[in-house]
Image (cartoon, rainbow, N blue to C red; front, side, top):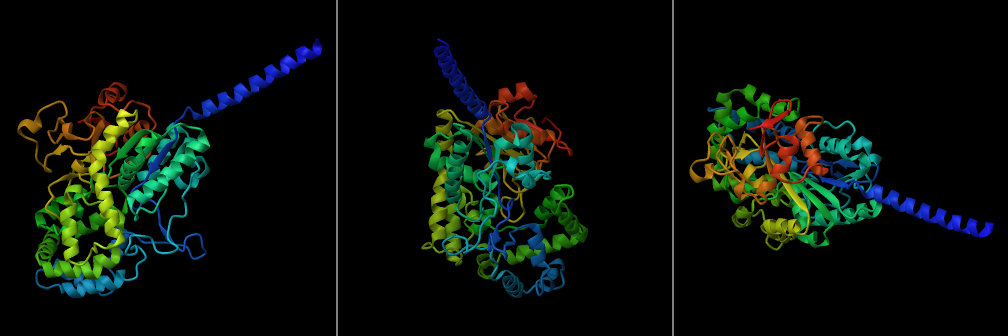
Length: 496
């Protein structure tokens, strides 16, 4: 009898242990893993990766551009642009610039592939709890946002998708899909949440296009995304328009940008040159840019050898500009239609065209989709779209997935200024967005410059971690924020 009771107790104990283990697994999976996909330049790319000769490849940051403009034989011609009594030899300037960028490992090969030995050295399928050095001191941008998300979700439930942003977004999406599978296997989670920042939004769009039927994602959050390109890339279509009024307006708007950053320092240096000199330079640039011969010289000697094959930049061309960009770049010798670069950007162009349909599909199958688009800065003054509202880089209309946006300094009028989706400042009408009931607009925060610990960054992190449903009413009820939000210098938030 005792033996029988003992057997029964052992069976019961075994059942309890099995149940306890399954409960632990269930508890482990209760928190949805969050994977953040960064944008252009937010994670270094290296040559000779994983060797003793590993070195970071210089990209297109302001520091690199400053180095370029102050290089030997460049500065002597560049300073002439600031005067109205010396003529800049544009051919000599481009030759000097070309000599500087020649052999730069930043460019990809003719088929849009990295050169041998290039890549990232921190592709991880493990959580941020195992990579604290990556984010523990970050206070701004994508890594700062990761740090904030770790505070909300726990660092063991947060992942960073680090990739070579120069390559085709569809190629990166394929790698992201592999990572999602690995994270799900590691955690036992049925689904993950994705956060796409800047060009990371393009990667999310490409992932959605290719893998939406797998239903592996419960939330898609696009933050200042390049889902429909950036209007400054209209230059690829030969749209170059520079005016002194546009340049001065842009510099005035950007001078206070990103306190303490290199960008702010450079803007202050440029302003210190003086409005008169800057205006002269703008007029000289305008004269130069009107010449098709000069444009060809610039393309052949500087742009093509520097970043002509960087597919990621091509994929920032807006959907409605793509055909004219292909036509123009083919005519000036920048794009070969028989190349792998063309095949890749043509395929991604179709991804852009599918975005609305893809969002509708994933929402129908249970996923939430939200977009956060910043505004409040004048357009970059090098194309005909210098009057756009942008976040310092990406145009608000593009990032929001199609909002109606007034020109900078203007207000909407007529029927566009009416309705529940119109901002109180009459700048934005969100009714035409891809997802009008889950798109938020934040005024006066520069592109991806969300600082750790601020109300703005906490808001983004809470969205990423699913602390509120992705709709205007739910957010207003929980946080008191409307669809249109104003940030002060400390990134405290209030309704516009």
